[in-house]
Length: 158
Length: 51
Image (tube, rainbow over all chains, first blue to last red; front, side, top):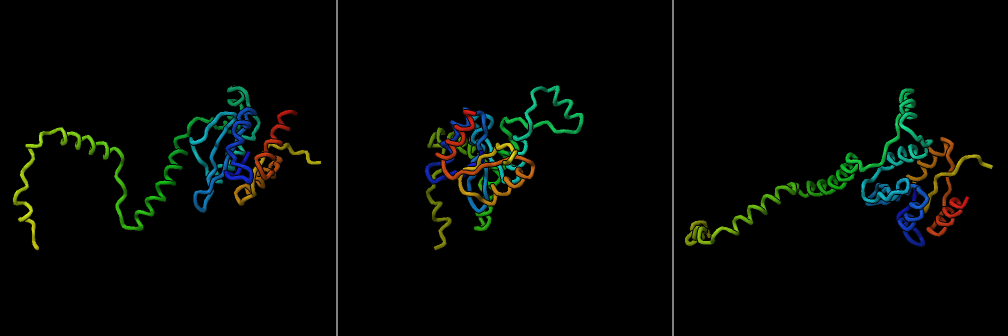
């Protein structure tokens, strides 16, 4: 099922439980900007909202794959692969696609920052290191700090 | 009467994105059905479930 996020009498998410009970698949289309992203909300009966997002091209491939005849055993697929047929994709968390989603979001923010001439934000790890160092400094005795007397005058050019 | 198996339900207004996908899948022999609201979608799902 392909659904818009907002509908006249509710949202597409309201269909998730019913689709889940029928072991179906629900994709919801959202439009964060001028493009459209499709969020898998339920995949073959399992809730998967938040794991990944797809652009329209990826959705088309995904739906085509979903509609392919279901094969039951690995043996069948080994035979099928031998004849050049591709094994259908399973539905674990797909890091590549999650990265793609993150990339889309980061690209937008970086583009905005670049247009303003600002440097991109450092990775979170550096914040953690900085915080750890800061904690160390706070725990150091205050008396170790150098006195600031006279420093202000040295730099004053008024 | 169409013999295509309906396996795609589209809920909400049609967009260029859904239109393209439906066109591709219809060409491949799959059937689709469109509804406008949550209530209509629930009705279709419950009907298909009871069959």
